[in-house]
Image (cartoon, rainbow, N blue to C red):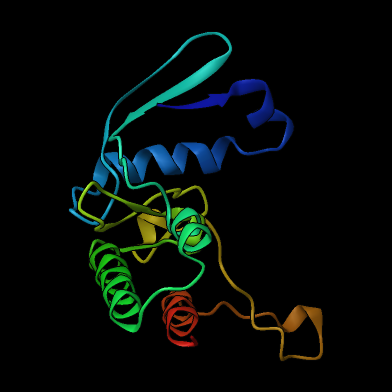
Length: 160
């Protein structure tokens, strides 16, 4: 269960991010995404009841093992790429891929979590636009395609 304190959400202006995370967890029915069974709230908190993943996260695994064998690394990288591809095919971009957000199930398979910073490839999912800063005048800002975000996430996963 993930507990989100409403006062914290308001104070840190995270209401939109938390709503976005809840929405994608409802919409993304994928083997590669942590499942959310239901959500509810009271006066103080928002509760997300999610799948329990006993394998912990990738960061904890790396701390325990210190280093992974080449075969293990290939396995986890391949599963992470498949996980990202699955959400890209659903029209979403994670934007916060890191070891803490790669959870492991009881068999050691990867699942993506923490979608608070996600955005969508579809116009209905877009929460922002990226401006082209190569222009010299602020009035010359142009909007770039959301496809640039997909390329950035792909670059991020391929740079290691």
